[in-house]
Every structure is written in structure tokens, then in C-alpha cells.
Image (cartoon, rainbow, N blue to C red):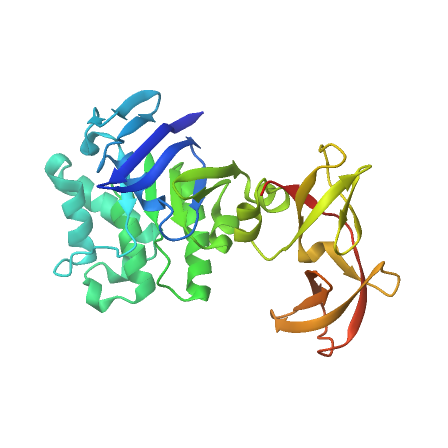
Length: 341
């Protein structure tokens, strides 16, 4: 069931148009990741859902009810059942972990119930040993956990997260991604998570929405977006790929590289198209139909990303060992995908 819906939303800061006709659906009890480059409008989407801004045109709906529409805020932020984790965390430096959570809960709960809720949430995020520590006494990861604890202690239905792990080193980021996922499943949260990091989108999201210049280019499961991108932008933003121009002929495509097989091609013969080739679809073998020169090799741990070039084309392959620069390798292409330009 959908919990959040944005329909045809336009929004501008003065003369700067940020969102243009943006539509998005976030399902209940799922993690939807909004991914895109800096300045594409990701954080503005969160602000509209939270109620900090109202759309110039279009509507924001929560649980089937209109929350904001055409410049008007109908449901105020404090009654939307939404919590938010900001990129800069915005922690209160003079408050301990316990004080922070107690302040957020406020006087609407009794003292004993507040203490029980504080202890429960602190344990959930691994801060039970730091309950009397202030932010300056916590590590970067612990401060991140406190920001998450502050957001979930009120038991919101919706949690908005604005690049919350951007300032953490990669190993800690992976740990916290796993913990966010476990918390989401345990509490039944609906999360809209903003990032420009494709690894976070693939690791965390049930679905991902790729945003570009204020509009959603594609929405779906992360693997679907990676394997079946609809546009050149989505293909190139979500991982390494070769992009070739080609012409469709008899279920195949003619490119500068040569004739390639297509995956689910539904394009008429004679059409000029863009073709995406992922590194995992390039198979280096002596029996390969093509030959390329090794122009570059990048170590990715247990694999080596190898750049192969020829007249008017460039592809990448993943190899277990690094080939010599300048050498020639034969290879085949197992599949290619047509995208919009």
C-alpha cells in the first residue's frame, strides 16, 4: 500500500527551478532510496514531504490524504507522523544521549514511560553504554546512531534520511546501512533515504528512484534499474558501462564495435539507438568475436577493471588478474541493452 505520493510537483527557490513535474510513490513498510547527483532536488523532496515547504504546483499526499497542494500546507509538519535525520545531524551539544531522547519525547509521556522508551531505543542503536555522554564525547558513528535514535524514539510511521552516512568512512557506512535495515524491519518503518551513492541505493533500497534535474527518470528495484536502465543517464549514474551508438537490424544492433545481441529488444529495424554494455557482460576469451587493446587497469580488490579500446569504441571487463597495458585481448559480449538518449 502506498503511504507517500507526490503528483506533478513543481518547486522553485526564487528564480531557481528545483523540481519540475516530479511524481513519486513510496510504499508502506519499504525503503525507497532517492538517488541522484548534487543539486538534482533530492533534499527538496524530503522537505516537501516533511512539511517544511509546500509545492508551488502539484500535491503531496500522505496515507491517501492531501497534506499540501498548489502552494498551500494543509497538514502541519508536527502532525504528519514523520521524523527526519539530517546530513549534518544537528545534535544538541549540551545534551547527553538520555537528555536528547527525553527532550524529543516531551511531557506527553510519564517519566517512567519515557525512561523505558529511552533505554529501549538506546539499546536498539547500541548506545546503552553511552547514555550519559554528550555528542563531543561520541565517535562519528555513535553520533550517527544518536541522530537515528532521536528520529525513531517517537515511533514515527515515516522516517526521512538525508544523506546521513555521507561523512563516514566506507567500512562504518556499511555497518550502519545494515543496522538501518534491521531497525526498519523491526519497527515496520517506511523510509525515504536520500543519497548520491549507488552502493547505498543497492544495499538498502527495496526500490530506488533516480532523480535528474528535478524529475524522476526511473523508479524500480535497484537491480532492475541497473540491468534494465531506460535512459543513458540512469545507466551511467548507476555504475560503470560502455555507451555505443548503433542501428537496429533483424533483432541485433550494429555498432562501431560490431554486431551485438540485444536483451528484450522492441525497437523497429533501422532505428538509431544508444546501447549499454556492463562490464560483467564482457567475456574475455580466445574464442571472442572482438579484439581490443588494454588501455587501463584498475584494482578493485579481488578483480581488475580492464579498459579495452578500438576504433570508435571503449568497453570494460572484470578480470581475476591484471593484463599488461598495451596488450590485446579477445572478448565477446553476452548481452547489450537499448536505452533512450
